[in-house]
Image 1 (cartoon, rainbow, N blue to C red):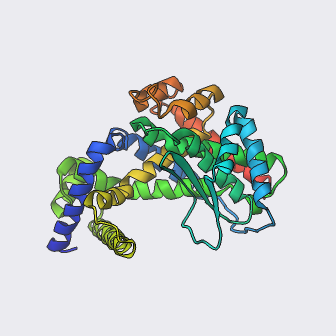
Image 2 (cartoon, rainbow, N blue to C red):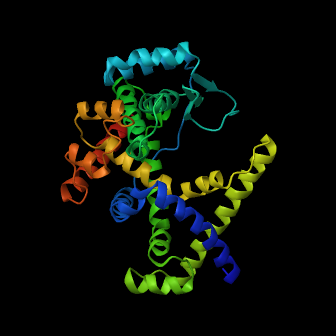
Image 3 (cartoon, helix red, strand yellow):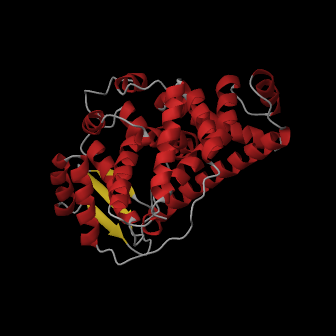
Length: 344
């Protein structure tokens, strides 16, 4: 990293942090909490063994819907009409040969579009259950700040219910790949831990350079200069890549270049991992089912729009600073992993 590189990186970060401070206050409010949780999870579970063996099967469209319907009945029968609606309204799309990128829910023109990239195994069932959770929480609603924060909690909860149903019906891990939930959680914690010093450094000192690194070492903890430069270089290259891909997409699709859209895409580098970490941990956590159903129904309504994460955690009887919380995380992840091992 030379002087010009640092100037370029800080220009990116200035735009990103201005956006985050306006639109993602929870990242900064719970930065240290998420870091401590992430460090604990990564150090405790990074050595878990995951079998890479995966198989496909002849699971048809009807087979997938049938199993998802049974999963939704297990969660709450009142959602079955919504499941039927996505079929009748053409809101569900199965993509083949990877012509679409990824599984997603998209709210557009009053519709809730779900796309599932076929894996040709029971991941298709799990992924549809996950995206259906997003559908219930968001379709026809204006997303609240707390809804934005906890959206992945709902998706992961539906996903875990799907895994429990499929395991209880005797399906094997090579068809389920239920371990992906833990693998993704470990990926998220790794990325968050890696980015934590940059977020903390910019938030407190307003710049990323060798001088701010020295201040960081003085007031927080030591970070090796070579490691620091490597991290900065990696982020600069990543932001350059996101920018080039965004501009390429605009040219290919005749979109108008919108800097705010570009900043939004860059901000995901810091804003996505912590929401997936929080969402996955809460989805695994032993919570009251009625409380979860209430969140599904109301996260993006007036009932919850003025509530903070602190309010929600209090409602769920969670103290994220307590040893009890950490123990419950450990027990939840271990129990999930044990259930997968039984069907390996």
